[in-house]
Amino acid sequence: MSGEPGRDGGGETVDDVLIVQVAAGNAAAFEALARRHMRRVVAVAQGVVGNPSDADEIAQEAFMRVWEFADRWTPGRARFTTWLHRIVLNLAIDRCRKPQWIALDAAGEIADDRDPPAHDRLARRERRDAVELAMETIPPRQRAAVTLFYFEGLSGKAAAEALGISTAAFEQLLLRARRSIREELQAGGFDFQEGPL
Amino acid sequence: MTEAEFQRLSTIYGANVARWPEQVQESAERWRASHPEAGAVLREAAVLDHMLSRAAPVVDAPRVDALVDALRARTGAAPLPWSVPVPFWRRPWTDLKGALWRWTPEGAVYVGLFVLGCAANTAVRLLTAETPLEAWLAANLSLSLGG
Image (cartoon, rainbow over all chains, first blue to last red; front, side, top):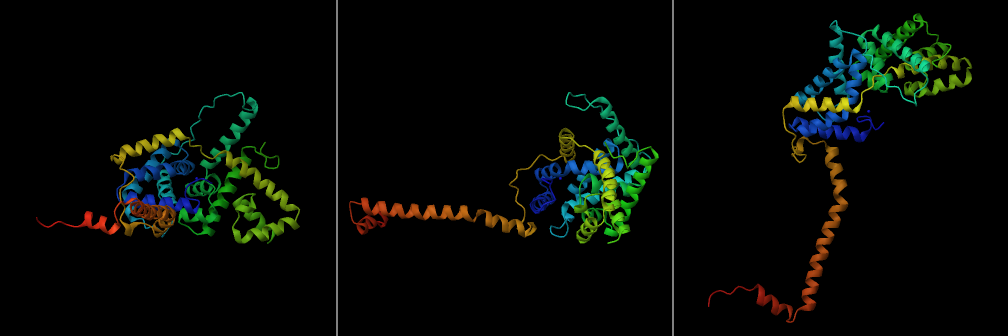
């Protein structure tokens, strides 16, 4: 979300105006707010739970909470995106506590003339699957840290705020997460000295 | 900065020093410039960065549209017009201030045009009047009371 809403000052102002209108019961403002942030919300949820259908449910639930509790949000006290991230992360981490974590759906890839040769695609696919499998092995809060910082490009400070923890605690989460993922990949035969390609 | 610290930060934040905490970026860059082994540390971190970037979930536009449509159905409310007023005490000050600045030039133009129009109207009436203005005013604006 740059161009992504919520990262720049203008985005925050738009969010502030929209959320106030949502609190007044404006459904059109709610739809606009949902459209602005839905992609990121789904991506964050999916980064934590891994399952696209669970991520969709979490995203909808998160926005329903925004709709329901918008009047509790005060402009200027915190960024709307921080509040929204916290809702999504709480829902996603709660969902992970239930025993339903499954591997990411293997979406079919349509062959294209512009695509690289089949063996290259296969190798890339294998590496991507390997990272996804490694992500499954780490705790949900570590997945959340990786998702916010690496997938969504938040700064360490913003990601820590979204998780409701200190920057030092966030660094610990990210440190453990990267070490675990790296060890999993090495155990699977990946050589970090050779490089990714 | 020590080698251990540099190594630790690269493990946490990856190979892009610009994404490290601001307060350590300068010392990290200095350490990198003066220690050739920093290159190897960052290259290794970059491999994992690259692999992680490929594993990021992809959310396409049709999926977003479907979710927004589902939300609209769940809220059960027909979209309201954008002009639904928000009480001024709930509006962010920045919004009001922004609106003031935004509409000041247009407002000045409209007021200026109105004043010019009034002046032109008066001038035309004065120049084209067949009777003196006082006589015209007396004829048109006086009330006849009876008789």
